[in-house]
Length: 313
View: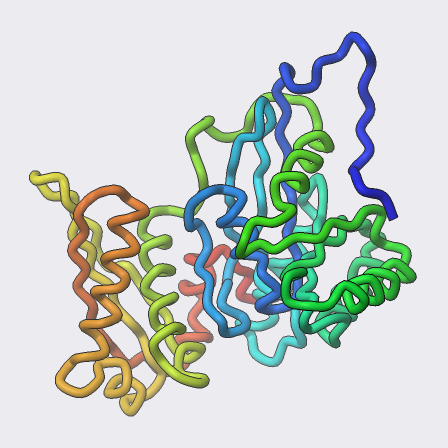
């Protein structure tokens, strides 16, 4: 186990003064902390975060600058045992992100340890002959002995050349990891403008922020039966933006739950979504939400195109 990612330099070379850029795929089991880590690295929300598993549905790019290096993180859906068409598409997107990246990191939730989902990912790395940087997350939540045992167990797999220990939520260990990742990126021009933090279209980001509120405010399985579409986006003369969104559910009974008694739930979802979007967009936002029933929206190819997923995965 090594503490740093090796780099190749010479005395005449100043790597900090030369531009470099690269893609880093962030793999992990559902709810391991991938989105939290990327949001921490970028410095703002580019991927939604909830306590529920399988929140991320598509690949999201989080882009940051570290000196002269542009780090482009691919926040992938969590890898798990797929059961539905959408599950299969999400898992395929995750592995596609890993195959396309310059570097792969695997985030493991120390509290959950070497669980079934993480074993599936390790088996996938071996099958695809990929190496990954091991990032043990939530280190503040477990005893040191447990942490060392988990590290030793994972290193027997032979796919982790380096290990880092972090708390993505608190930021512990993140700066060292980012610095070493920057040193490992290939030399070359930046791939995005210096001030760009994501490739996600504003309409899709707005839909994701509202979907985050559905996960936070609704119970059990209902959020998984919903999807959001930003129907319109209108920039107003006063500098504000008016956003109309449709929340699609699969059954009429679900529509009543999303609306809540006297419309209280939908109002709360809209208010929290608006506040988040105003913070991210740095402008006044008006959010109008509508709930419609669309049976089997999960079998609609158009939804998959919007998310950048392969319908036939």
